[in-house]
Each structure stands twice: as structure tokens, then as C-alpha cells.
Length: 360
RNA sequence: UGUUCGAUGGUGUAAAGGUAGCACCACAGAUUUUGAUUCUGUUAGUCCAGGUUCGAAUCCUGGUCGGACAA
Image: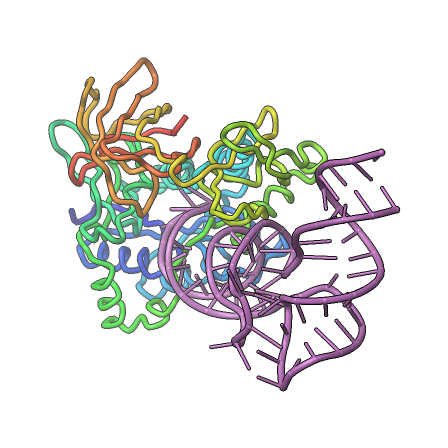
């Protein structure tokens, strides 16, 4: 353990800061890195204080590194972030799907670019402030939930490869969030404790992805424009503003009053139609996923029992896997609400991540 | 043109002379390292002009608009 070099991703927030401290206390040779993914100033959104990548946070991360006496680097990954995370984010919406950029960012940026950077600095490991754990067992690196189930972030990490995991340390995996706060307070890091937690998509100010799409594709409304809301039996119910502005399961913002709640059931990109239906019509226990990444086992078998999660902060539900060639059919024991194409389905065996995929 | 029914927040509907309520939409806040969901709260209405009555969304008269039937 001593003499090993670790590159820790510092966001300027409480979690990664404490993670860095813990590593240092354990005797690692710690180097900090903060990366720039998006330039708020050029986008005119410099007021944004939240998120992991504002200019503000880079400064705070740097100050913190100085304070605890570790080297700190800033990586400018804006171009790569743009080409991968953002372009996929936009193209998914233009296909009527609902992307999860955080999953992509982890795979591409944190465990892509940052790991390369770690090589340059001859670091043995990279570390983040995620609430998740890794262990080596039966020749596999196994990702599992953080001890603090309420903060567990393993869902966002299902895309990590064995190679990625072999070089990963999650210093907070055995901690509960409340204890992290107490630790920070004890160490006099009051500012960190009070800081608001990051949430929302880091590159989207005002929590409005619709505006962001317009900025990215200025002629989106000319290209796509309004279309019909239709009922599940095909009746025209009204007009919508263009299918990319909607997401499966959405209820608010439809601008259509039908006497009872209506949800987006399906997005038909080809005909620019949005199908609306009741809550019950959005319940289903079947889904298919592709882009499979397996973690705990190198293979999954027909009829394998797992616990399924189709969104962060959802209870896991017992389910059965039916692997096909490149995809996996999943049947859940209970109906799931609003299975959204483009989102991540992650399956667990107790606390271990068996694998995951993208919902078709 | 005649007869008739109707008109209540943005939408759909309750209130049969006594505080205009509900659902949906919209907005705001809470929750949330994705999109959503969920929770809490807020805004907002009796078609117009008269009349009866202590008191009118409600009863009467006229008008305006809409639907149906008749021609």
C-alpha cells in the first residue's frame, strides 16, 4: 500500500475531498486532478455554482489540494467531452431516446482520459469520491454498492471494464454520507459541509435540457417542429413542440389538460408523434438491453436471477435474464414504471453489480 | 327564421337562493450526481346589462355567443 501512487479526481466537493484525505492518511502518494468538461463562461452561464466542473469548483479543488499538500493538475477535456458525452446526449434525444450522460462520462472521461493521464504520471490507481466498492474475487474485479445504500452510486458505474476496475479505488465505499459530513466538520472543513451537493446534468445550466438542445442545434425547431400527441388507441389529443423535448414517463410540461394525469408512453421519432397514456399503461415487466457490460461474471446464463434497477434511486426488483446474441431480454417479477429507451438498466446480485446495458 | 338547450379559472366539471369546490394544465418549492417520477404549495372563474331578494352561479327580462331540432 505505501509508495503506491493514486490519482484522485477532485471535484471541489465534500466527497472527493474527503476521499483524498483518507488516501493520504492511509499512506498513498496522492495526486489530485480536476478536469474541465464544459466552458460556462463562453456559454454565458457562469452563474452556475453547482455541478462538478464549474470554474469555481476547479479553484476550490486546487485550494484544497494545496491545503492538504498534494500535487494538483487541471485537465482540459472539453473537446473530448464534447465529442463523446455531449454529442451522444444530443443524438440520443434526436432519436427519441433518453440518454444518461453521467454513465457515459464515467466510462469516457473519468475512466478514459483520466486513466490515461494516470499512466503519464505513473500512477498505479485512480480514485473518485463515488459511494461504491471494488474487490477482487474469483479472478474478477467486482463492483458493488457503497455501504450507504441511500448514497450508493454503483448504478452510474456499470460501464466500467475489468481493466478500469483493476486500477480503481473508492475510498468512500465503506463510509456513510453522514459520517463523511462529521469527518469533514471535525477536520474543520466547514465550507465543504455547507456546500450544496452536485446534481443535475453538469453541463446543463438551469436544469433545462430542452434549452440546451436548442443551443446545440439552433435549427432544431425548423427541422422537427410540432407534432401530434396521440392516445394509445391512436386518437389525436393535441399538439406538442417536437419529440426531442419529451421523455418517456414524463407527466409535467405536456401543456395538455385531459382531466386526469397523462404520461408519455412512447416517442415515435419517425412520425414525430408522442403517445400519451395512463400510469397503468406505462407499467411493464419486460425490457431488452444492448451494449452489455458484465462485471461480476464473464458470462451470464439463461434464467439467471438478478435484482434490477432501471434508474438511480429506485428500489431493485427481482428479475430474470435471458441473454441473446448481443442483447439481453429481462423479465421483472413486478411491473416497472416508464422503462425509457436509452436509460441504463443495471442488474445486481445482492450488493454486487453483475452488469448492465442500455435499454432498447 | 321558429322552437329549444346551454354558457362557471387556461381545460373539463360540481355547487337545486346562503362561504364558488374538485380534477387536469400552468407556476413555485422539496426530493434527486441523468432524463423522468413523487411530494408540498400557489395563481386563477360564475358571458353581458338590468330586475326580484336580507342574500343570486342558481329565479325573472333583454342581449351576445354556441349546440340541437324545425324550415
